[in-house]
Length: 120
Image (cartoon, rainbow, N blue to C red; front, top):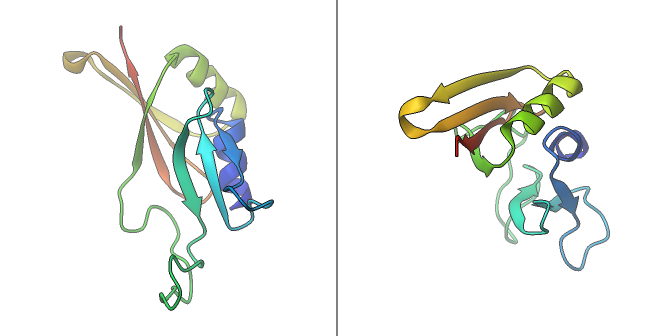
């Protein structure tokens, strides 16, 4: 959890915040954009969503049941420079037919993020 939140903060420039009523982000957190809008709700895999809900004996690594998380972003060049400076491996794709530039990067838990930027 800590390394994922640090990645989202330091590499992607997002802002992790405690969920209302909690002081810690050890088990659950909101991740906000630069304007303070929550864009992700991050919860450790060993935390039940409801009382009595079973949790896995060993939390899965990586994206598990989903392939990736896609985010609409702005300022492709700034984000690319930020990722390069962090030393994190990434892939790029330019879909000219859609006017879309994409950066693909994994967080320390192996979750793949697709960062989408309009050419406009």
